[in-house]
Image 1 (cartoon, rainbow, N blue to C red):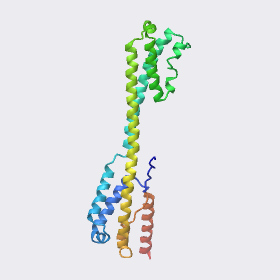
Image 2 (cartoon, one colour):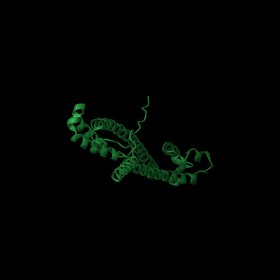
Image 3 (cartoon, rainbow, N blue to C red):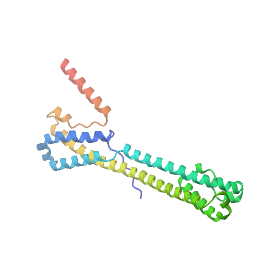
Image 4 (spheres, rainbow, N blue to C red):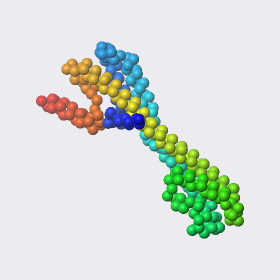
Length: 238
């Protein structure tokens, strides 16, 4: 059964998740004596810090996409090289056979630019095979093993480029999944930490209670700051 894709449990950037963990751990260390009463001691805090640091060091999507784009560019260049090699051969074949003849059509090398990667590889192999079958008829227009070797070499290079690009696409999918899973694990633990912190200071110290309040987005943080500022102004004016 195909594994279902994970979904991020937090809706702020991954970099912010790491900062949230570091900030809340600082408060938790301050309140360590209280946290130990909830069986959330120093070792568990260290483990959360280690997870957050590992999360920080994972390649992000921009990096993975960039690597994928580099290999895609190499694939496109290899495709152009292969198509050029095939067209060069077909120009020679057209000199020998009418391009509407069965002998010409047997190569199946029309509309190269419309072929998928797999079809282009298949076409290149067929062109080399068919040309070898008729090489005695094509010698006088310059078709030889050097010409066929150019196509075969370009085909192998293109196939390698396609495989590398596909591997990188898979690496990106795996990388994204890994970041989501680790981020969710960290977020779940961060929520536990913050819930303990809020319980410790509920109805005891408002400022320390707010130290453990998680905001789901930058916009939520801005709203919370504005509300807090408005309350402070109202109190000072009252």
